[in-house]
Structures are given as C-alpha cells and as structure tokens.
Length: 438
Image 1 (tube, helix red, strand yellow):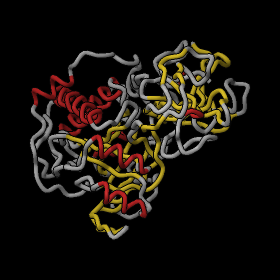
Image 2: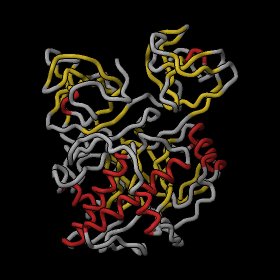
Image 3: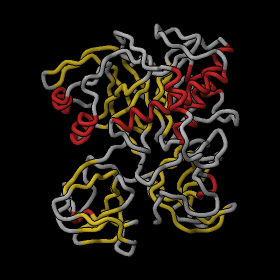
C-alpha cells in the first residue's frame, strides 16, 4: 500500500477483545470454508467493476471533485487499525456522504495486526500462536465494523484486511496468519459484512490459495493482490488459480507509489483494477408525494412507515417490482423496507438511477461446477457454471424444482438461476431473509 508516514497505536488489546466478544446473532450455520453472511434487513452488497486508486490520506471533497475527470471511479480509504499510519482528517460520515453522492465507490481498508514474520516496518504484529492470533482477528474485525458503521458504511459492505508481505517459508508464521484471516472472515460474516483481504502475490495470496478448499479455515469473499507489474489483468495470476475467487471477487494493485494529476490536482497514489465487492452506503433523497414504505416491492406487501411529501428517505439500492406510474423501480431503504421510486426525486422516473446500485446479497457457492440455468429448475438450459467459492450475487429467490433439501432457486444479477442448495444462504429448506421473493 501507499507508504505510511507515522504510527498511532489504536489497537488497545482489551478494547478490541471486548469488541470482538459482544453478544449478537450467531449468523448462518454454514461450515468452513464457505461460511454464511448474517445480512441485516437494511443491507446490500455492492459490486464495483473498473479502475480504482488508493492513497494514504483520504483526499478532500474538493480533490475528489477534481478527480471526477480521472478514469478512476473508486477509492481505497483506510478506516482504522493499529497499523494505520496516516491521519485521516477528511474521513468522516459527511465526507463519505459527499463523495458517494458524486458517484465514487469506496473500498474500506483496515490496517490491523501484521504477520509475526512480516517484512513491513509496521510495529504491531500478531501472536505466533494461531489461537491468540484468531482472538486478535476477531477483535480487529469487530473494530473494523464499528469504524465502518461510524462512517455510514453499512451491512453487506466488504472490508479489506491489509496483510503486508511476509516470509512465505516460515511455517509457524503461516499458521498464525491463516488462523487470523479465517477468524477475520468469520467475525465479519457474523456481523453482516463481506470479508476481503489485501495480500502480496507471493505470501498471503499463496497461502490463502493453498487452503482455499480447506474445511479448517473460513474463506474470504474477495482477494486483492499487490503485484506492481502494470499488468491490469484480473486472471492468470501466477500464484492464484483462475477458478479461485472467480465471480466478482478479484482486485489487483498493479502500479505502486506514483503521482497523477487530474483537474489540476496532483495526488500520490497506487493504481488498482477491481471486479469485487466494495462499500455500501445510504443515499438521501426527497419524497415527492405522500407514500408508505412496504415490506416488499409492491403495494400488495404490508405497509411499514408513512413518509409525507418533502421528507427524506435513505436508499440502499434499487430493484424491480410492481409498476407505479412510469416505473417498476422500487427503492430499498436502510430500514429494510421498500418504497416505489415514482414518489422519490431520484434522477430517473423510469429506470435505475446512478449512483444507487442494484440490490443484491452475495454468498459463496459450496460445490464445484454449479450450473447457472435460464430458469428456476433443472429442466432449464445451462448457461454456464460457477466454481466452488464463487460469489452468487443474489437479487431474489423463487420456487422451482427440488434439489437436495430445497426447492428454492436464487436469481443472480445476470438473470440466471442457481439452486439455493449449493449457496451459503442461511436456510437449505426455505427462503432466506433478507433476500426478497422474485
């Protein structure tokens, strides 16, 4: 990552351990490696495809405005961690609201405990004991979620744990790192966030690939590698098979510290290519007519909350439902309820409105060569297959032909269907909240 300039100890062990052991939902009962995500009602996963940059200190709103002229549409931000080196005077909930309303996607980075055998100068290293390292990771993940929430980064977001380069041949160190990253993943999943890891191609990426299918470790949902060769490809990486993290789960930092200028503003950055989950946030818009939110995207669902004309709603994402006026678009709110877009002043009254993303919940697949079909059943044509551990970006669920213990099928963002039996959703017999019905 971009070179850091000063250290500040934010990782008081007692605080982190307490944060990691707070009471809460145990989450979906899915075993390693594809542990489930305990999504809250007011959450969504956001996939970003395109160019990104990261820099040590979050730029000002004015700088981000100037950089709208750049090819970059996402920015990495250091939200916390004891090894975070730069001060973040801009990084507030107001800043997040301002830059995301411009259209920027955010990539939350947490600079937590580093490997016992790290090559980095980061001062705070995890224990060489896998058990203790796991406990440290649980605390770090809990702290990362708290930091994300304080910025308005909501459930369903990916948080990238930064694991700098370390000695790949140190077996004791390897064991600690893998337990740390597994525990990081499980705690983020328990709290309703996606787990992601930034790792060097020749250390962390190697070891995560080695245990990709191991039932002893929870697998992160996405991998962001560092390889400064200026090759922007997201596949054919030397140390990661193409079948691993294959569906909207990869990012590459392809160019290290360098200066670029857009809109007369020069920043020192790392350059990245992304097709991976990023942060989800709420977007504030005004209601244009008296309307009730509903528990689903149609008037046939029970009414939830009344919103008078002129009030503000916080929109997570958009999906399709019953036509109202000129549109079939419904807005999912941070409350988990839905309101027709016809009565909200989003840019379009007929279709989705950028920068609001489409609604989805991402879960890992649990079997190899999972068929994507043209409809919800085995009689429909096969459109392709998904390797084990792929992210199924689920928009809704509906009934279809039985597979295993369930007749539920998941509709993906590309319009294809997969049986829910091989997706790490909470239930293997019925529908899973908060996914809506198709």
